[in-house]
Image 1 (cartoon, rainbow, N blue to C red):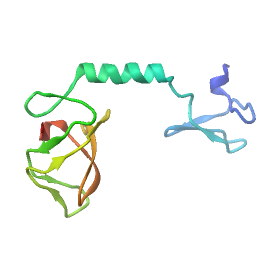
Image 2 (image 1 turned 90 degrees about the horizontal axis):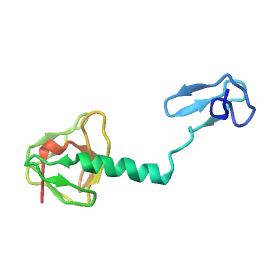
Image 3 (image 1 turned 90 degrees about the vertical axis):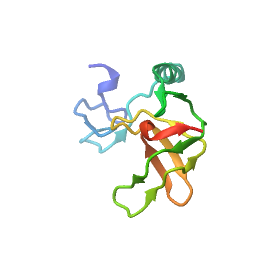
Image 4 (image 1 turned 180 degrees about the vertical axis):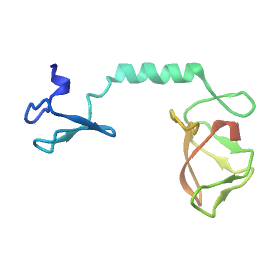
Length: 122
């Protein structure tokens, strides 16, 4: 077996994945799998932007853009809502598996993820 499938602490081959970490049941050591290089991260980000996250009107969004919410959004698990016309500054594009591809902070609410289909570029 190669080094990636052994515990870096005790070299045991009896390891398992638990969420984003590898765990060794023999020595209880937990570690993250080898991370991608910064060149691979840049390439992945470039591919995501090439595919393009687009707002409700088809404009391509980028990190740091400001957007405006076009639909009242109820927040799960809370009685708060994001009202129509709320301006969100300095968005960050993320790869959300559930469709939430914008990470941002909204005054009075806090950190939140939004779907690009409910915003327009400001």
